[in-house]
Length: 150
Image (cartoon, rainbow, N blue to C red):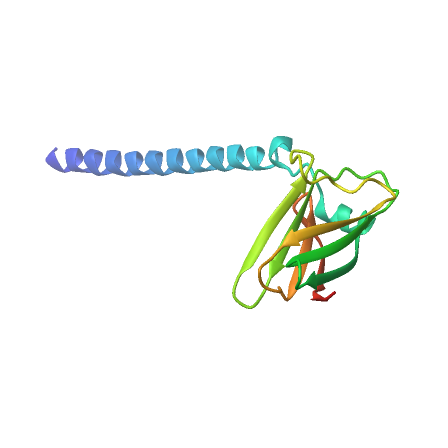
């Protein structure tokens, strides 16, 4: 009879272990399903597509130069007639050591985004001549150009 009790105890431990494993597997499956559904939710998808913007080429950098007398980087940008929504333009000045980023947008009173079909020159102060300037529209890289003296 004592042998029968030991077998029941051993069997109940195995059943408990199998139940814990099944509950763990079920919990992981449910958690994975919830996380996948959240990741695919539209509110987490980007509102602006960088690939689409690069195909449109709504902004074109026509020229860049550095004026050592005024210590300005001059960036001439042409905007196409395509109806694309440009909310901000970022200018990233780079040299061998550092890079500085400047933003222009409708939220800024002194810097306006170039209108459709127009050309506008932006003047960005820099004490030293940077090597290149990168232009981003709505946080999407549009172009990188070398800077020469004006």
